[in-house]
Image 1 (cartoon, rainbow, N blue to C red):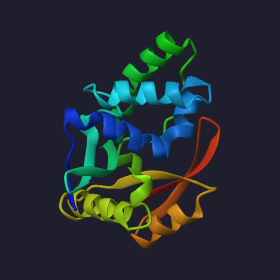
Image 2: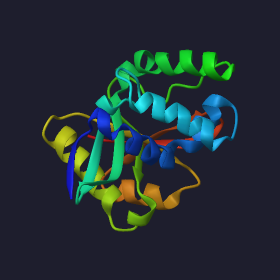
Image 3: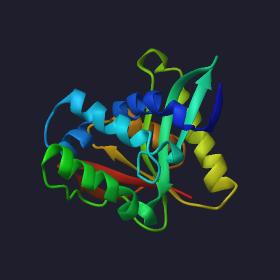
Length: 184
């Protein structure tokens, strides 16, 4: 398996994988539990530059020329500028107000979404992607990584803690109660 910076031609696969992790949040954004509309939103933004889901902010895990995992990560200080195109799109395309809570902030690189193909789950791919990010950003560059975990997902939290993440606060995002973890 190799982990590499995503390219625009990866955007369709990236959108599917990121939705595995963020579907409920996207439903909250569009105020409707509609997988077709959520997929439409994610496909639009993974193929565009300068937004929180852009291929520019993604890494992919690839095996035998098949993308099996993807992660979106960006500087938390840029949340508002990266989220602005999403806000405009949601309000214009779906006709709903868009004003979710801030999920990150200055001082951390934020792991927005991490997804692994369903047929590849349970093989440690997510852990390998996270370890890659820890090695690259925390160990090599001295940065802080942050992420949110659903309080109803103890297995994910267990993995994050095992990798060295520590709980720093609690957050709410589109009605979901989450724990904010950091490493670095």
